[in-house]
Length: 173
Image 1: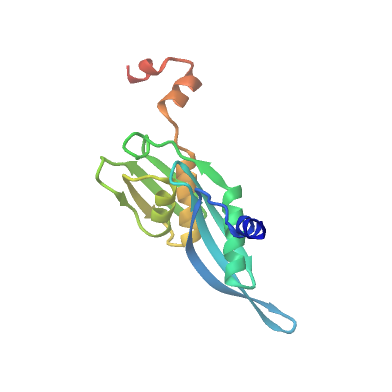
Image 2: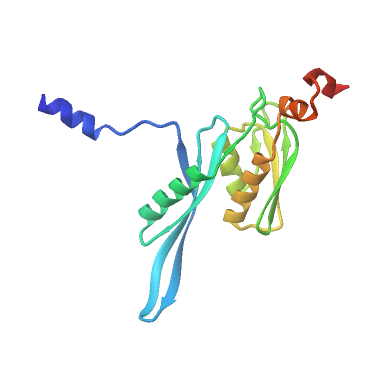
């Protein structure tokens, strides 16, 4: 009986969320007694089924910073509408700080053609076929936020039809 209780406690919860660390940076703050070291972690969290979030965490150790980044990422989740070919429904662009990201849907079999933090965000969102370009800045945090912003601005045909109060069939006319 004691063994069964022990197993239940040690078993970790299986979640569908995956996390990927984009960047870990050592940052310092100058205080009266000298320099205070801490770590900043940029984490992208997603379930590869259309949800993704970008989080930032700062702590005195790397593990704590990553944990805080994951918690922050869960607070900033974005729903991504995916097509049958695991692409995005239409071209989109997003802005984050000085970074701009442009995305276009791609044919099945193309893969994720993107660089750096944008690639990580798209992969964690579950997008399989897309063309993306970073413009302006090459800061990983701003690019990840710009990618999340671009994904957040995506709309499906049914959403557009509902906004215009017309049936979906009339959109193509």
